[in-house]
Length: 299
Image 1 (cartoon, rainbow, N blue to C red):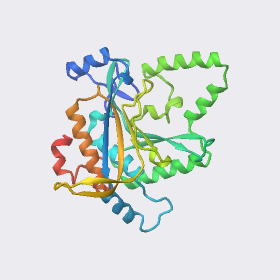
Image 2 (cartoon, helix red, strand yellow):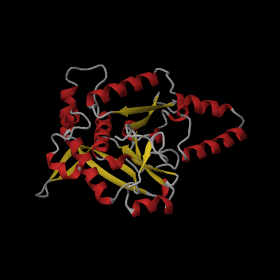
Image 3 (cartoon, rainbow, N blue to C red):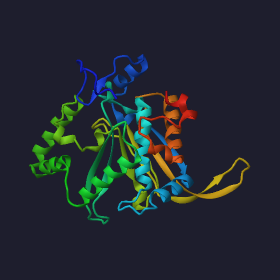
Image 4 (cartoon, rainbow, N blue to C red):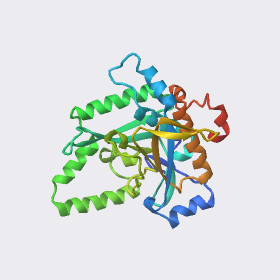
């Protein structure tokens, strides 16, 4: 976390300008300025045997809001980004920044129907959070949004929608200019998922497979995670024997300019290890205890 450092010329409200990066990562945003032109897609399949046992244990007391796979994925991603800080970088106006906070965002379907609306949820994490605090915050936001509560970003979009179309387009062009320079009013973007560290889409909740999802040139988001449906799939042991297990496919779209392939590979391995050993998520996000085998991967 770099939010406590003194702000210098070139820094933004939401990030610190990186001045000590290598030449390649300095030049790449200048040559390739658009986030959508620099996407790397990674697909992973997770064995859910340990997850199922863990969720059964956590839900043994039948809490009002049960623990589920989505909450584990959100927490595992937040812990991964906490321990792998280069994943919390973003590029704006051809410059690279270190984000001041770690956050996750997702869209909530208020009613599961063709005409049901959508709302936004935004999780602001600290190094002290864990699966229990993230579980409670997701419950608070999902309950509020489905109860009709609206956050300021949705309210702002509804105001723009009511204006004459030519005026809306002109205002949006101006807001996009502000976006490039980190000057968009906070009220417009405080719940905008594309200003978060990672955006998640729980496609499995609507019966879809995991899939590639693009990044956007708007905002500062550098990671998108699509979660597929839970299904029984074949797994092979070292002897070539097949066993059918519950599993989930995850699709990760990453801005390839913020780090290199070696860093990404270690990051994905850490993310998968956390999901396959969900007890590790009970420790604070900043705590690397229990990850001794991954020590080299997270430093």
